[in-house]
Length: 91
Image (tube, rainbow, N blue to C red; front, side, top):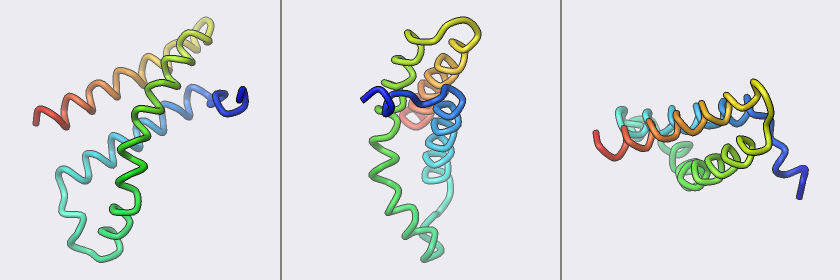
């Protein structure tokens, strides 16, 4: 169990950037105009709905576990998640 929760903070941040970019792409562009991109988007849509909840929980876990300057990356991840959710819901 300890190995699963041991995701580096920068990797967690980059994964959250990927999720927000996926949301941005799905909301602002017609991903179904091409067969390949539409199929890829459909395959990734369910994991991309569950991944933010998992990443936010891991960011909070890493925030309490980190020391010193390593605490900034989970904060960046949570701020990016908050901005992404706000932007998706209210735009």
